[in-house]
Length: 383
Image (cartoon, rainbow, N blue to C red; front, side, top):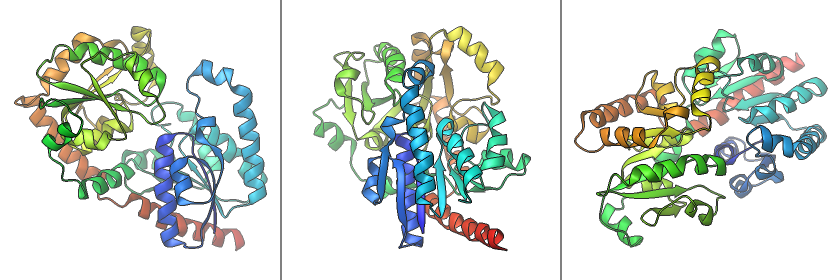
């Protein structure tokens, strides 16, 4: 069968590539065409646009590149319609993908599946109307989303979380000692605190400077930045001091050896928890007090980190907007270092979180359930 996938960022490229591999296991004759990235290219098929040509974040960047975005959107609509796949699979990225879904639903009979739900349960809940009208089924990777979609009587399948798969695969083949890791980089033998400051330049600029300032209060530790894909080392060095290290392509390796971590909210908070590394969630924004007020007014959920959302309670401290100050980072980090009661409690809660997420195999379950749903859709269509 023919599968058309649309991805708008690096994490989507990773999860979509794993889904494609799983689909090939179930359907060896699968053909792929996609808006995606390098990981999807490795699986095979035709990449018609790289996600980097789509990934604009924030009002001003979107406004400045509006013509490019609209041109890509128009091309995508026409390309999907012309290729006429057996199914269109949308991966997160709602601003773009929901527009494509609206057009394809109106002009074709191509079934539309959504893999990795937009975070409409947090804000922009009105988008549920678009999903109900234009999407045929949702394949969720977060367990609490099931109840949300069931409230709207929308078909949702919880397939497990692909982060569990990625971490499980890494750990099965990993037996490196801490001494080997630091020696390989010519670092000291001091314990490590990992810094995961986001995947976009604005996030890194806003968060890393404050993380580095807080690090100066912990001379018994060495601080190591996990560099994000596509961000050059020179950009990081603008905000680092001489004592801070940086590695690229080694985030899981770093988390395996880190005593604790400062993590910008996102998938990284969940990955850090899966490695059982105690963390403080740090997400700075300008005009912090105003943003904190708007957050309370606009957001429909009590937390921003996936760890707390999945657990349904505060497992990790969230320093967001106006709360993310150097003094607060210093204090919260000190609370989760070895020997503290809060560290012990966090690790116990991590174990409960891992139980909630379930076993590895999300991509395979997603592929199998998609094919079952596709078969049911076609039966209804031709009855």
